[in-house]
Length: 581
Figure: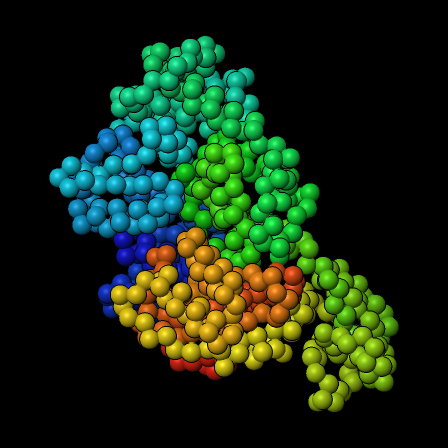
């Protein structure tokens, strides 16, 4: 069984590699203890994942089988059992939870704090002194939360009283049910189990005659529902079915148009409408309040495509305001927006391929244009021809695929000999994605606009953002409108944090280039439950396509370094030098 320290170690490594010393300091134990934990973790993970100590590169977690890795963690962390106990018992003290889970009371107290943080945007875990803890949500929401838990594992708590044979009979009996076509049969099964498990604590009774088909299926499986409990179940299923039927491509198209009006850097196409219509329909019919498996950190994706995740927050807000539909998985919706942006990154970039062998040049040209869709390759068979093409095309990259020597004054040259391999293709793609940024780091991250913020430990994150933004306005690095947008964005709670560097940002309607101002802090703080040592105020032009790649470049570059290196940066000059590495 994994202990709390070992589980916390895995969670930290899901986000990023860390040094052995940093892991030991965070856990309050010795480096030798962490090394023993790593050995035990590798034994327990049984090939689903592996923790590797890479020395100077830090300790890294390689997840080999994501689905079974996260399922394994869920069996070790007791979190779902704790939630089930709160749902099935109402007010429950820490001591009662500790006895039921056979855990120390101090560990249960720590778990309650972490569960509150994990689910604070989804549902509320509340407590009353001398009474106990409970899920502070309407009764229907509590049923849906328990249904989510039982969909993951019907035998999550001995209090439910299910056995394998009963669940199998119910699943088989409901397989041919004709009602509620938008709701998956497995979700209907979990709803039946949740209502049955909570039958003694349900108070509200909706007006419903009940569905005789499902009543027959339930009784056939060996469960007995009186009219009150059956009415609760049927009413809930009817409401979910009704919500799902309200989601149409036309509705989604309208919401997307409104979303993109505030984020002109986004892209709207038929594929995005189709993807989101399907996803939102599934969310409406089968709400997910507790994910079936922990998704791990999306910090890398958020940092690469912040505009996509910003749009997902706005889109979900519109769903709630206009349709009354509550959806919790803004990250997953953000992925659809990110895919749409990726589809439209098709601006052709000229590349010169210097090659003496015509056959090899032709093969390499086809390989590059096939695997790097935003490239257009021009073949030069001599240095003189290459110089002529360079003056005419202004290429972003010259690939020396020959044995000819080029003058050192020729910039942006990649030397790749013979047939270009997949590794060479990756090298070219990375070069094309970052060449503009690497050539303009001093302009994109101006040192003269950066400064040190002497914050106090008592300052809130929003106070710091407002103070820093106003100082940038005073020195004419930001407009008042851009400063307002940055502070407004930070109040939405989905803060962009990359390796302990917070990036408050906005999308400017001005066509000026990207501006990033590195601000050091006197005192680190916690933002959205993540440590922050410094911040980068970023303002991007929504109409400039290449500026979206700056965030991806920042993510890739910053995550190559250990957190201690980011914390130790003293000024903007050191920050820019780190980006050059």
